[in-house]
Length: 294
Image (tube, rainbow, N blue to C red):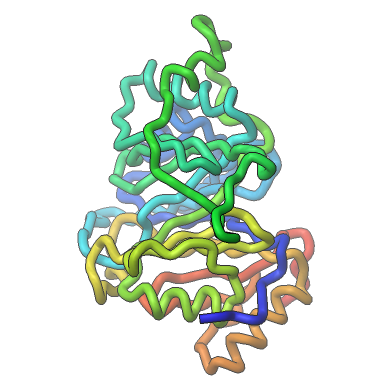
């Protein structure tokens, strides 16, 4: 299927909002192990990021929240570090703290490591290869899941790396990957309505979409089961994520496509909240200092 209207090429992923059962425990993990900084905290809610940039994570505490399998929601969120050296520092930190990992991969366009947080939420930490090194075949971007040369990544920082000081300035939320109930429905929403460009389909089980030619800002899969729906309100994990657009004109264009598709939405102080066909919530917004909506 061809989709004609593309979302603004400067669109990116912003803050990811998670619900956690123990806020103190989650903050310790994300600051000590991952290297984020707590930028604000009050009334059971904390925002964590790097420096003065937009927060990468928003954590809300809900006592008694429980882990539920087999639902739509987060597969992983992906923290993009500025360089291979920074990836080496993160890998060294994870090794020296004996933090469990779930895998490593060379995706041809990027190099990545994977781990769960303290509540089982999936995390990817990765670095991009320069775009002029990306490979194309028959006009399509090539991505893979090859073994990562872990020792070579660690060698970037040498035998005596500097003392861990957290994630570097310039770190961002590179992409997010979601469980959905139906690939065709997800593609029709994210490409046909929001306007992301389809980059790769994986045999009917996953899709990867982006803005501006990036390898992917969003992945979605049916690996939690065909037909899964959103988790209940008391579940640990995913609440919503931000799609950050260049300006209000770009946001208004997407809102107009939502209305043309008769897709329900809710206007909030920071933008427009919608749900994808599987119930995953998406906050369509712009940079915070540009928001004029009431």
